[in-house]
Figure 1 (spheres, rainbow, N blue to C red):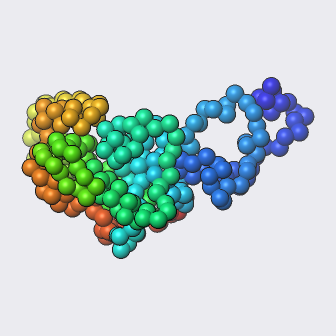
Figure 2: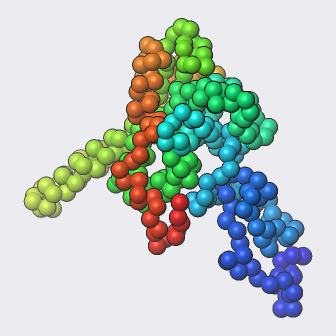
Figure 3: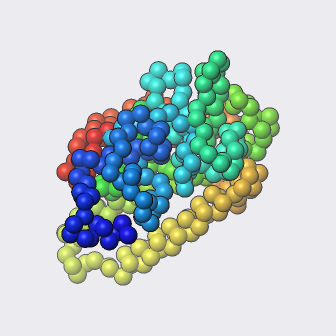
Amino acid sequence: MFLLNRLLPGSSQPAPSPENIDTHIFYNPPDADPDYQPSYFDDVDSDLDDIELFPRHSLIRPPPPMRLALTPRPHVYGYPPRCPRGGVLVLANAAPADLEFLGLPAIPADEIPPLSGPGGEDDEEAFCERMRLLGAQWWKEGEAELRRAELLRARSADEPAQAGLRTVDLVAVGFEGVVGAGGALEEGGVWAYRDRWAERQQERDRRREERWREDEQRGPSGVDREARMTKCRERRRERREELRRIARVRAARTMEERCRVIRECGGEYFETVDAWRKVVMEEHVREGVIAPDRDVLFQKTDDDGYFL
């Protein structure tokens, strides 16, 4: 009926103008945003209401503080109180084993707010320490900065490390022993599985440019195209096998099972938590580190027109 009314020439409902449509924030419903302005579509009851269950991430303003965003890819947020630069720790696509390690429900029923009240700073720092061990990434402007950097990388495939993005993806971390709030491990080591495809892709891009220059000197007759196609097929098979291993690691349900799968898939082993903490802080978390080319995130582009 709503669609018929819209199609009839005598419809009394004016078409919405772009300036009347408010931009959704990251993951919160409209009533969680203090700046939300009701739009025309809030009063429309049609069969199309439930199509977009999770609004797109906004690149305009940061969301209200939240501990766990319950979306198809759950995100966990930590707010390090002792970091001189402030910022937000973001653990994207948290698995049930990660949530249990952080003391959160493995199958959450609702979004969770951050800690507050007396003693909240110490508890928040302890929570952030566990997030760091899992490889949560630090961003000065939170998830808005992360999404903006990912958008720019998608447009600049030749620069995977643009604006602070990591070239090595930390797939999962498994702990053989029990880790305390301060990161002390009773026994056992740490297993980590990392995807270095983007890092290797940089080297392949460099070699490809060298081959192009050599081809220009040799001419068409001096290029062995069959050999290059064979190498290309080998790289595709290698990537498919790597994606299968990543899927196995992410499917692990417990820390014990995760350690076993990472070991079977050829992951890295660290004898102590301190050894792992040094690696994860320098290569993945990078807390307090501002990327030299971070200013590109604040530039308006012709395609999207977003500001951070």
